Image (cartoon, rainbow, N blue to C red):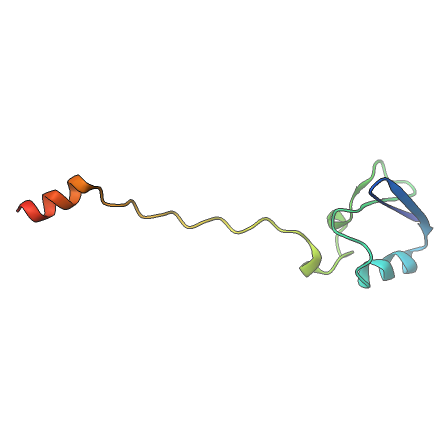
Length: 83
């Protein structure tokens, strides 16, 4: 299979499978670089190719924030001390 890469509008390739995977292993292929291989319907991000990039290189969304506890307002404090 022949692979091509694209970054900032610059296309490179073709690369054979071994060379393509070596580029990824060395970190020369970034998660958002576009990749395409013969027979593929469209270009896609390198991070979407299963097993291509080390998991540390794949851009994951940040974890969700913990919900904040509601702050006590002045009226809540006033009620506590009024009793």
